Structure formats: structure tokens, C-alpha cells
Length: 130
Image 1 (cartoon, one colour):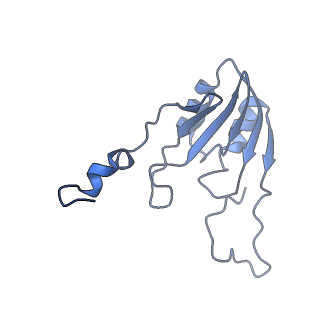
Image 2 (cartoon, rainbow, N blue to C red; image 1 turned 120 degrees about the vertical axis):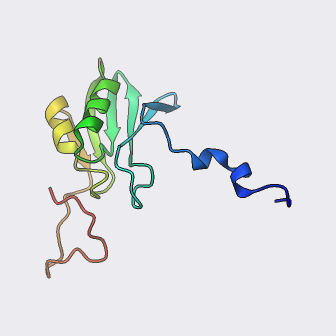
């Protein structure tokens, strides 16, 4: 970096939050950012729609009605065959229950969180317990 360049000049796109609208990230993958910005999720958790016509939704996000409505609108006219859960953090999996009810899709992936025998969650307490 030269003396007349700043970090912001080199990576301006990383400073802007992603749009809440559906973004096509490849020919078969779309992304929708949930409205749950926080220090943990940064601008919001990303939910992915994979495929065309018959699709899978990866990490349906929080149990947020506006995010569910946006997912259903983004997949209108398509069949949601599967809901894939990569892990059970509250920003990734709680939306699966309502999405399954709305689409009839099967849920595949991470097993529900189970606390340790002593009742603690260990180092991570951000799990979806439903």
C-alpha cells in the first residue's frame, strides 16, 4: 500500500452491507441475507437457495417472519425439496420449522442441539434448542 492509498480505497465493497434482496451468486445459487445484523452475524446470516425449479434451502436463518416471507417469495413457483442445516446456531436453523410447515420440505443436516450432562452448553451457548 502506498502512502496515498488507504485500506478503504482498496476494499470499498467490503464496507457496504449486502442487499436484503435475493442476490444470484452463481447460475444455481441465490443468497438472501436475514435481517438479524449483530456482532455475531455481522450484516445478517446468509441463507442460500440452491437449484432451479426444485430447490434446496441451506440454513433458513432465524425464526423471523419477514425472512420467511422473503424466502417463500424468492422460491415462488419452485418446489422446495429440502432444507439443509449446517449447524444449530440460532442464526441458522430456527427458521426451518416454519419453512417446513410452509413447504412440506424435509429437513436434513445437523442434529438438534443436546446440552452436556451437566446442563451446560460448553463454550457455545448460541444453539437453537428446538
